[in-house]
Amino acid sequence: MAAAAVDAPVIIAGGGLVGLSTAMFLAQRGVKSLVIERLTQASTLPRAAFFHMRTFELFRQAGIEDEVRAQSQKEFTPDGAIVAVESLAGKQLAAFIPSLNEGVEELSPCRRWFVSQPGLEPILRRRAEEIGARFVSGLEVFGAEQSEDGVSVMARDVASGEVRRFRGRYLVDCEGAHSKVREQLGIRMMGRGVFSNSITIYLKAQLAPFLAGRNLSIIYLSNPVLGGFFRLEKSSNRGFLVVNTVGDPYADPVAGANAAADVSEARLIELVRASAGDPNLDVEIEGCARWRCTSDVAERLQERRIFLAGDSAHLMPPNGGFGGNTGIHDAHNLAWKLDLVLRGLAGERLLDTYDVERRPVGRFTVDQAYARYVTRTAAYLKAKDAPPYEDDFRIELGYIYRSGAVTTEPGTPELHEDPRQSHGRPGARAPHLWVQHQGKRVSTLDLLGDGFVVIAGPEGAAWAEAARRAGERTGVQVTAHQLGPEVAEAYGLEPSGASMVRPDGFVAWRAKAAPADPAAALGKALDAVLMKEG
Image (cartoon, rainbow, N blue to C red; front, side, top):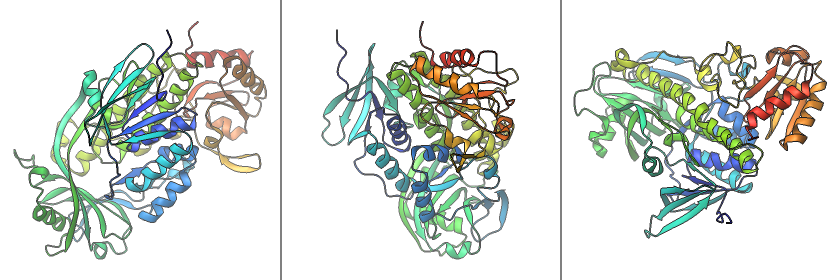
């Protein structure tokens, strides 16, 4: 019996930051997707997002790094500090990070940037559409049915109530915290639950005089009125104020004392004035969003042909900006696996590694976002269950994958390490190093592409033939680069050794020195990643 026709091989529920990134990464690999989005028009509220080095590395590979960076420079002053103050007019209480990009040059060709979501999302959508993604709006996904060969997705027209069905081979659920698909599947969120009823106040006010001569990216606030933080645009006169707690931040809030209890305009203005330290400040309220601060991860990220990504998979406090970045990394991890499986070049078991790899990373990142929430906003929680505080570089670049798609070596850390110490170990992100290639100065990360890449040392000429044979036999793109001794050292190789890097930029396997038969060794390692039956 013939398989049912599909609207697209991959259906994506939700056209926000993570859904758009999923569509872009799939289209980059030639996989067509259909994005179903509830909203017909994007919000114009100045929701800022902090994007990490790893995320910009992925934007670089997708060809949008320069455009996103230019958008950031229009909106925000780069390289600011993260501090805590009593109020903008009051004294400084703590300095958490002196500059957002301190020390990043050693680790990445990219920097950290702030970009508003209204500024970034159109760039993601344009790029995704240019290379093959399709979008439908005004439809809310409320359920899905799976069969042996696909997924039927049910969506309701927000305006008319009409129900439509879409057919795909796979569904990626990026619907967020209130995902109907996750609820239908009975997948629970596991963690701390709600610990703050928070609000985000979008505002205009003349705050620039308070910040003269100071470049502050995030301004945490701690005073008897509230605990939260400011993020302001380049002018310092527009942005948002997040309020997580009201009252003394060092005391456990009494019952009912939550920030979302009163969102009248008068109360919002009062909170902005208390944060500025000026009781007479003129304030224009542009909007207010209620939300619950949680620290949870889904108990599983896959149910057969359905995958959870972004806020559908993990919910965390905004402290550190980890939420959006983690969702984008989910999408990138999944895209290459879906591509190879849809083309018949890898076995379906490869898709099982998405949950195995990404759920531990999600749990670790959620815990670190919570640690920053406690440290910077809600000190009264510190004695309860605050996890150990890890360095940002470990969270952004140092997480380790363990799955059947990685040949793990003895001594590999369980979950994360300082990326300066990974030295290209399997399961870790491939290290960045500047090299000369075809007459140009490029990062080793620029040599990675849509397929598998073999990085060989200066005496590793045999690996080029090994890569060619592995690619011809499997049908998978395998490229080899023979580089200098400094690269071999960075990747933990002897001059004759080589590493095989997956399409997502993580090292899958390495031979520290050349074995007797490089082609056989590389072929065996590639077969292990592809997980084809038989």
